[in-house]
Length: 109
Image (cartoon, rainbow, N blue to C red; front, top):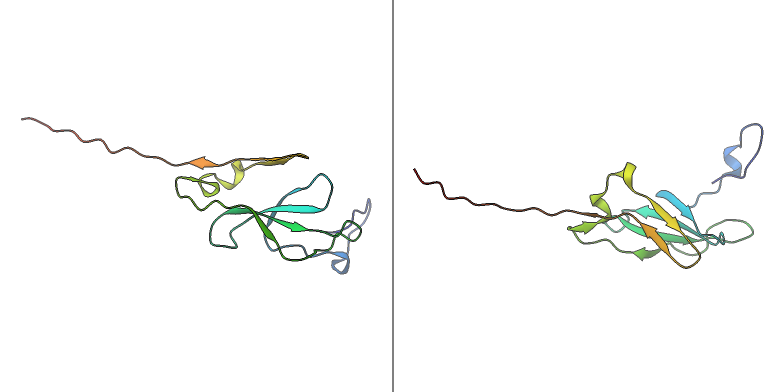
C-alpha cells in the first residue's frame, strides 16, 4: 500500500507492507483490510486490522470465512469471476458449487 500522490512516483520507502495475499476490499471504516488467501491450504477470506492513523498492520490476520468444502468453495470460482463487496453490516462474495452425475445404462443387443 502506498500514499496517494497526484503527480510523480511514490518511492518504495513510503510503501506499507500489509499482507502477502491478494487484497480484495477495504472495510468502510478503514480499520480492516479483507483478502482472499490460501494461507491455511484452502482459499478463505481473511482480514487484517489496520491502525486508522498510520494504516500499518495491528496484530495477526484472522479468518473471516473458511471455505474448506470441496463441493461449495471459493476455489470453484475462477479468479477473474470472484467478487466481494462490503457494507457496514455484512459481506457478499462469490462461491462456486461443483457437482456431478453418474449415469448408467444397460444396453441390450
